[in-house]
Length: 414
Picture 1 (cartoon, rainbow, N blue to C red):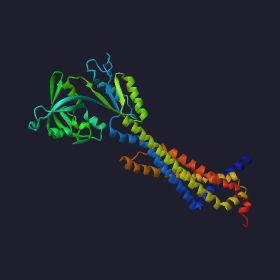
Picture 2 (cartoon, rainbow, N blue to C red):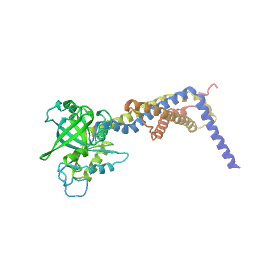
Picture 3 (cartoon, rainbow, N blue to C red):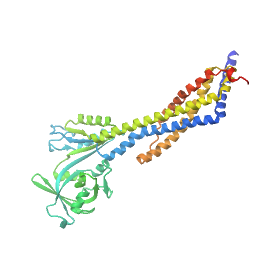
Picture 4 (cartoon, helix red, strand yellow):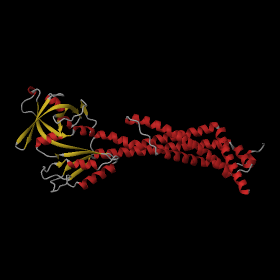
């Protein structure tokens, strides 16, 4: 019987507490609205910045891909006899490496850290306009011939302007730089004849111009052939001069991949393109710290707004607090009511703010990166916990005013 009555009293007290909390939230509409608005704005800005922080590396890494390779692989000397395709074979020239090494390096990548590897073979040739021989003399102009998978190379350097943009895949097709096109009076669809010296003899290659590339660099004076076609002309089986790699990730991750490749293939010289690697890492670190600093500043401003608003709420409700104290309510209970009220408002504000912040981050993603940012769901618990924590910390000092309220003084004359 006694336990039943105690449980009944506790249940009634709990229901009464919820009713008082609900009444408190509904009666003080202006102050509650200001508090909720402050928390929502703070949570929205924090969510926006954390969404940018969470997705910035992936999107900025995609932007940095336009700068090209960040690792260069080249042979460092004559390889010892071995069946390992990672090492330069005895049948190849000492200045070449085996292209099979690239497949092993690609397989060592992952979804999170994709490795793009392009093999390149260089040669010197004399080029002639085979469509209009009257344009040039019979001797031809010396050009650098590059054997590679041009489609893959263009993915590595997406900033290169290709005209037309059609894919280049045929063994009898070539891509030429705009400088070569001007010198030899070549256009798309014309025939190009290349004479490449091989030892004491020479090899003739006739290709059709599939596209003209403009890079603003030395590539404008080069001719790009399919790798297999140039290897066949030079009598080289599987040899390449060097390889260009693009490794996705931070500076530390790129250096770790470079060290791993150097350990796995000791006959290769692995050199990071430090201007790209360290510039990318520095920019990413700067952006991260900027976003975190802005988040902390916004939360600090939100806390200051809450202190002022909650202090005003407590002072306006002095008579109510005094009456409840006169009826037997303790300081701890009254402080708990105020903190619970702030906690409910902070939880609601954080959820609404997270939604608004996600919308803002997608808008900024379009403005900064040209594509909307993905919603970073791991930021939701951080935004909620941070908003509630900041709200409770900011409310603690004003709520302690409850202890100094004396019923006899505030209810005098009632």
